[in-house]
Image (tube, rainbow, N blue to C red; front, side, top):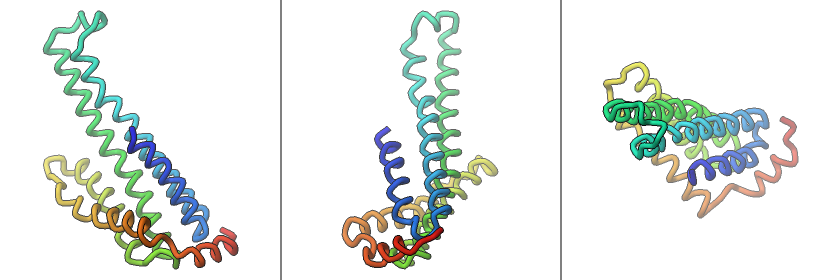
Length: 174
């Protein structure tokens, strides 16, 4: 839940930072990020449901222990599917943010490329799970982590080129 709260805040921050490049693309990226976060938050309900199921209760007395165990496993599987669906929204949002970073002039172009690649890796991992469920896409984080880590370090250490951002923000019409 902490991650979800941080993702909502990041959607707003990146909307404001990238709005001078293109207001509507930045807004779409923010919406996609929020959709991804909401999807993941809803999927987390299925992650916590087995705790309630396995703890028992009067409402579960009509189920056999095997049926309760099956429901708990089904709930975890549904969480996994929800987490996969989230990656499409999240990945599309990062593809758009990467594009805007590349176009901005106040982010380094290499960060835009890395974030676009990370977003594409999220999307590809989703389609691999859906289209080839037996194939493990465990190598895809190799494409996701460098961009995210470098972006975080860049923003903490260097930040955006503020004079260029202010100039674009003052003159942006889209």
